[in-house]
Length: 139
Image 1: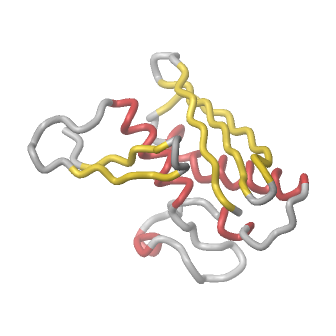
Image 2 (image 1 turned 90 degrees about the horizontal axis):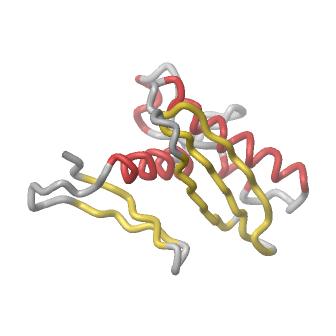
């Protein structure tokens, strides 16, 4: 049973936290994957060049959780920035393969408009079905 899930609201480019207080099943396995992806991308990973930021539990883990997308917030909107964004998202999702939750995933990034990064993720689930997840994030 799932007690907590993140719903991606495509009409407002926002997320909503859904909390299960009734004891019913809140989400399906697909929702679990979407929640895992969203938490992985939008949790601040500890930076490689300083110790600021990051998830509080990282000191107890071998591999930190989250992504380093926050390092790009002040970057110029260049092709190199897109490449870094793609690398950071890929890095943040790698644990899904290592822990055996998915077979594979692909990540594509492009500029949605001047200050918005679009991230297209296609997850190949263990049964071979594809789960597309499209996200936009302000940079």
